[in-house]
Image 1 (cartoon, rainbow, N blue to C red):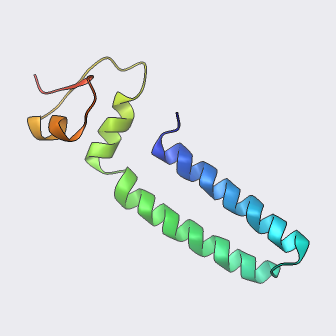
Image 2 (cartoon, one colour):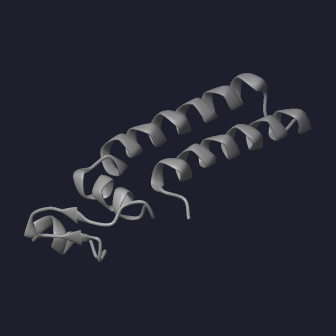
Amino acid sequence: MLNSLQFWSLFRQILIFAGGFAVAKGYVSNETMLAIVGAAISLGTSYVGLNARSQNNMIADVAAMTEVFEIRTTAAIKAAIPDPTVTNR
């Protein structure tokens, strides 16, 4: 299963591939595609910076790792993350 950072990295590569394909087929010019892909990557990285790196999401990503057996945190964070490895003991 991909974590959020891996997903967005894969998404970026798909955008680059799709853009290259569209330029090669002549659907759009190279300059237009550079602007579109650049804007999409800028918006995507902003989203990741604001959302994926929130405290709860970072704890959830770590909790999903098979090497992690327990994460001790506050009751509020435990309530927000439905994972048995996250405890508030």
